[in-house]
Length: 154
Image 1 (cartoon, rainbow, N blue to C red):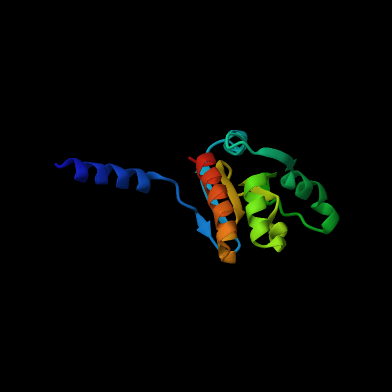
Image 2: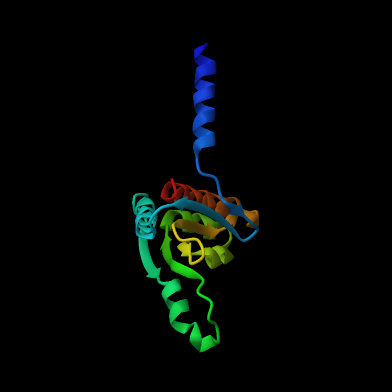
């Protein structure tokens, strides 16, 4: 076997072993993994922080929905756990907003991590699909969010 063929086979094996989005839509990308919610949430936080970003806010969506379920006339429990993390990048945001000042609507960046009540042990990480906008600058941010999601769900 030639070295070039060996390298090609190894590269393809690596590419096909990477987790792919579970779902893509015009609105979001969704990734999943099996494990504990706290572990995946920590992996998501680490993936954000290790890139030099600061998590500005964490929100407990699941807790809020559970707390207000009866108040809005629902009995359905959607999530076992559900949180969001918000962060930003001065460099990426500046480039995006210099290209179009109205892109401020996409900042800060939000990622969610959750576990459905009906399928405990499967943890999802999701983010908005910024590539669907057609903006080159937002596509760069989308790729950063995708890399973070892939790292958290590896």
